[in-house]
Length: 292
Ligand SMILES: C[C@@H](C(=O)O)C(=O)SCCNC(=O)CCNC(=O)[C@H](O)C(C)(C)COP(=O)(O)OP(=O)(O)OC[C@H]1O[C@@H](n2cnc3c(N)ncnc32)[C@H](O)[C@@H]1OP(=O)(O)O
Image 1 (cartoon, rainbow, N blue to C red):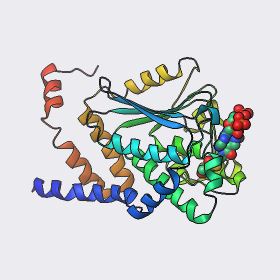
Image 2 (tube, rainbow, N blue to C red):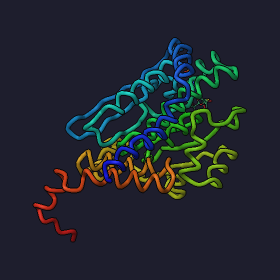
Image 3 (tube, rainbow, N blue to C red):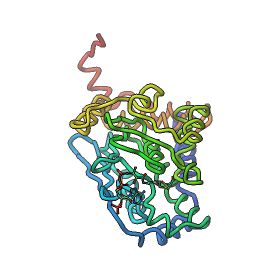
Image 4 (cartoon, rainbow, N blue to C red):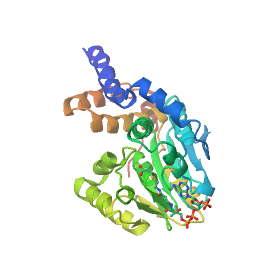
């Protein structure tokens, strides 16, 4: 009976996750062709096998970490890489220099400034950021300095946000005559609810680190000088368990976000059963842990 359940649930979860990936393969390929030649900056990925924490760094400091077309394509490749990282537990997304990200690189934007190309860019960024959103890792954005436009959208693609004192986010798309192009509007509603999300989008208000903490957009504020180390420490507190346990916890959250209630409970049972009596569970039982 259980094996029937196991067989059923994988396709359900995978079907829902495929929704994010299946924004038409040919459209994605067309987007990559279009965006790749639009150069500038770089995105790096460092995977620390010992801790299970990966760090993605936007490296275009001279343009305030604006995302060029080339960086958008690199971002897609990095998320593909992380999807295959079996021992991974956590991820930090950050920017280099004094700004988290000033959104789309205006030089790239000028080259693709028509509805068709806009749809291509949007399709690629939706695919990348929604797959990031669905990684089985505990993910956090370190918001140091400004997150503007598309930059503010990036911050919504992780589970948590840690702001440095100077961290600030603003959904300025309205001032640019557009709306969120990277899926940040939908994720913002999931994060804060429709009322606050609509307020932030329509007002284009700058949200300081303090305000972000107050409204539940930020999970912690860290001093500027020790921002990366403090974010690492903050994340370490959440990823003490075995990677299988962390991955299953995150997959419960992803399932609950995407599936119907019934499917989500089935997903949860399916994730639970292999851990019950598994290596981490047996080690814990042997230790006779007291939860004082
Ligand atoms: C995709 C779409 C969406 O919303 O979905 C978007 O994101 S649209 C993009 C929305 N973002 C924007 O409109 C950003 C506009 N930029 C700004 O507001 C400002 O530059 C700040 C980001 C607040 C930084 O001001 P600050 O006075 O500190 O520095 P700055 O203005 O001298 O900027 C340093 C250099 O970075 C460049 N720079 C800054 N942001 C850029 C961007 N997004 N694309 C291309 N270049 C950019 C500046 O032009 C300047 O280049 P030079 O040294 O060569 O002069």
